[in-house]
Image 1 (cartoon, rainbow, N blue to C red):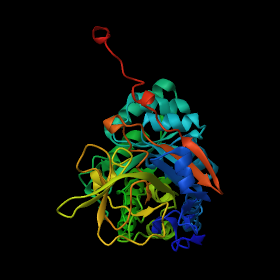
Image 2: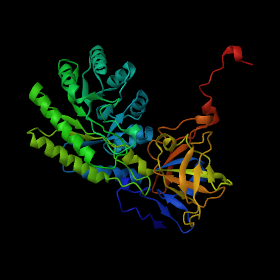
Image 3: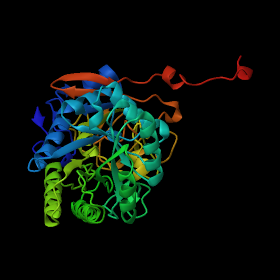
Length: 448
């Protein structure tokens, strides 16, 4: 086999998983497994997660933070979460971000340590906050004043101490799609800078709340480093203000995540290690310059850890050419298992998995899904010379594919397998048609 030419680079700066190889038959391998055999064994569409890529991605972040002694990597579960992923994240010593009661429940079922869980979200319900406090010493990232009041009430009722961070709107905009920016002034997430003092002051008077610090997340799939450094400087300013005006000095600073991955040749993200090193350096300099003690530093990557580890296998169905010249390669999945192209105009890279060494086509064609939407296009322009029955691999699908998948057109969701050292293990079973109708109910008046 020949190793991928990208294999020597950081996971988030390469298109394919670390372990990708092509054998003498032109078969694509990942995690020591032939993708053609995986397709036969598990069916298609199929999500594949390469464990080695995850391990190296985590190592990159830890390496970048190695000079900042009191630091912690949190995995942003919304990118991809299931029981097996919780167990893997825990085994690597990471913390975990959750943004819903369902994600919290998944973590709890996996036995994830409560004190390493951070609850996010702009509209946490009473049920969600109660579940968090009942599970244990989870950390709550407070988004607004109303939530602060609700949390204080729940903590008092349960006679628990709730550890909190305040989510700040730093007014920093990264270079990314408008829908995944979260730090700009009109963001739905967080508390404006000018209101943070009042929020902290209020929380400090509540005996059932323990104020740990501040959090800010500026967006997702950002490729430039400068906005993150600006974010750290703004948070240091805010910390100085709180110490000067309230006598409160935070113990924890969460600078968020959102680092980009390489989906196509046009992407050029900063490596995870370089990002973490630069952010840690900026926090150190910003705090020391103001005479502040260094806080515990948290970073919360999701996509940049799991995104590069994933690929999706599809089977080609029909191929056709229209009189005007448009050519289409139709596959057995699409927007239901990957809604990112139609939602964010996301660009992906593809390869034939059964003929990876085949020469490119002379004319471009589009890889399209099977769903009843004209916008169900996975890749607008590719030069894959694909035929009916071929296998196609789409790279970079480890993040926000499984998480955002749906049953559109009443289609069962694919299976997901974890591969490593030649072993392929199911971590999410393929849904069946019975699963599709499991929660359907027919009123008696409509019964036969």
